[in-house]
Image 1 (spheres, rainbow, N blue to C red):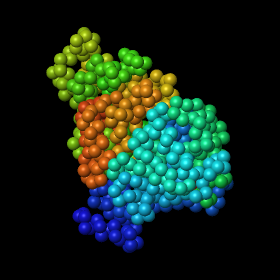
Image 2 (cartoon, rainbow, N blue to C red):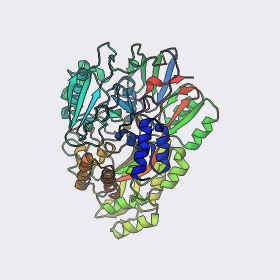
Image 3 (cartoon, rainbow, N blue to C red):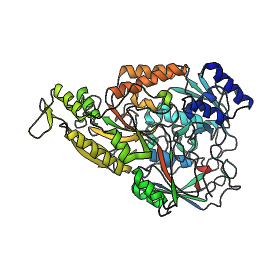
Image 4 (tube, rainbow, N blue to C red):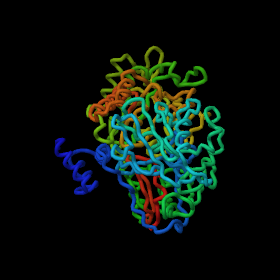
Length: 595
């Protein structure tokens, strides 16, 4: 399709002669993804959809209890400290951003009155400012009005380095001004092609100035609202037992007419993915369970009972392994895995290359994940426009052995390779979860055949993904040689996703290990390409720069992608829920209903 044809289709959509859905279908037919097609509509001032799930109840309440299982139990309820998806999901129950992402990649207004466009004056022609208008009449759960002051405060709070917010990357390089009580302007330092980051989606939840104003910077961890939220969401906070139970009640003054449908909300934490799936699909004890990290054959058997169904939606999420190039066993200035150290063996690129060849991705997909994942060598897989065509994976024990032989790593009497008195022995950690333990076992077996010894470590999920600064076993500490988990891409654009590969986001003691670059690896070429992409308004040139960032880390074999993950959940057969692969599961919780 050439540019003239594309312009013709866009004109038809604007004139009402072609529906948005038909346009997206045509773009998919010529090789684009649905999220990219919807972004094309946005870039050309075609208004976004107003709803992503048809809501049928004619009044609020009356739905009884909604029971959700988060088998990785939430431990805090401040969205700006929520480094784990479980805490982001729990926080989103009470707090809302200006806009969120639906499953097709549409930007949907939540606390905003509308999505900014050039046509409505929200987007500047030079790409340096975005003006957001707030929805009038929105109240915090304590009855006070939401105003522009709260939005400006949220920016100040998250951007302050002393706060050490997980979301700081979305706010530290912008300026936010109050225009009037219901209008704010976001000012970027340079033309910014992907402007829908501050105040949007996972990183965008607005917090009340009157509850957090006295707890900024170094005092941020002392705020009572970190565990007792006062938000604008469809459900009000009732009680929270970290690591166990979270309860809420219907917000009778919610800002969307006839919502929410359910009277109470119970979120149960703990257990494991299999028992969570069983509680929805077989026993019907719960209505919804998140993150069905269960072998697909097991899920299919559970579905036969008819009580529940599996919901799998495409996403940019990736299951991957980090190989630690810093030393996790030596402490420097109060932290291990410090960038001031060098790993005794994994700093050798040939060792990392060999380990990458010892991962049987096809078997992991076929025998473990099924519908839940597709084998890949690329960290970014969706939208397709941003996926590297260059990166390929291969499983070859023979090639791995040759690489190690040629690099001088010789097998000792115990069968483990060594050089200069250093052995290829590693601690390989991940969260406790059957598919992950089976994946670990597959990789360990192949590594043994190449003279690499892996000690498998499994950490309780609620601990592994905890935001607890004092916990040595969190994935952000990386106090091991290699680790595996899924990282979520929170929007249908990989810019923020890829700040996991920039030097200024390295997780360390100074930022309370909330920096997004958990690997600690840095490359000036990646930093340069990332910064250039942030300013590049040409979509194709920008995509090429972001692809380069991805390729640098994958080709260095510091990041070893395994599977492009679908977002898989279990839901009761009679539950209508809004499941998006571009936002957290509770992003549009107000619209869920039974029937």
